[in-house]
Image (cartoon, rainbow, N blue to C red):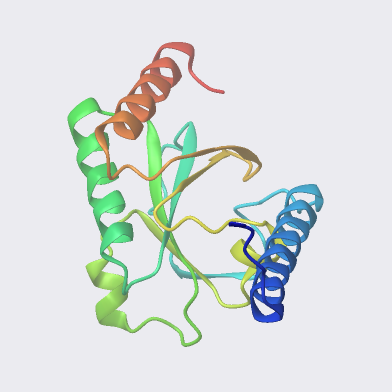
Length: 176
């Protein structure tokens, strides 16, 4: 007896569609990874100030948390950043970059996001020009508004420990 099984046209078609989908996904991933993104700037004209930091001693860095007001993960990262700064006396300004919202955030939302400074990304700069997509991430900028680095969201303890190490180095070295 022959145990050779014949593959039907429908099975060939299904496997072909799976292969085509994988190739398309790989092409999209390659395009995204090889694209040259703009370097973020905290003073970018597309970022609309909702609340500016109080004048006073300029911090060493500004850490801007990318927040979508409807996202629990974002708010947790912001809350952890505020707690981290209070506990460690971190010499950074903690700011919020409100992302992925079409309408200007309400005054109640602005008040609820208790950071030093708030800016609204009304044109999608964070996602479309800078190439960022992770809610709750911290974008770090120097005193002049130039981009330094991105830190993972502070929702887990590993990211918080890394942020603490960087903050401790900043307070000892006096800058980036």
